[in-house]
Length: 92
Image (cartoon, rainbow, N blue to C red; front, side, top):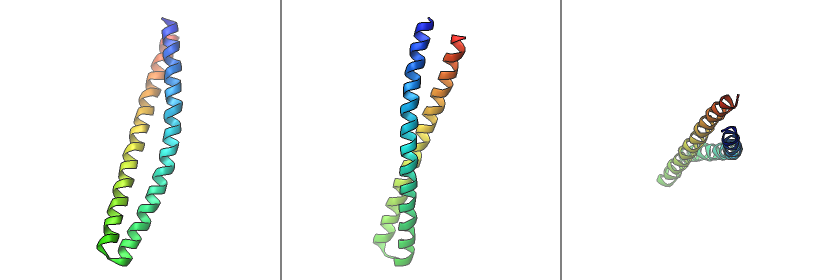
């Protein structure tokens, strides 16, 4: 039984590492898309054209989608951390 728990712990640890890297990338991308969204909002306000307004809405949607993706990654990490804690408790 301890062997299976240890094997599962290693797998969870690898997955956590991968998700944390993915979260760091998502954070960078979210910051980038938020900057683009802010820029497009200003352009939309200044130009007051339908095209600029559409570009701003598109940028907002992209930013919102990335924020959702980042949130999902954070939730997956939290779940795996709880699983890791449970597995560690089972080992001791």
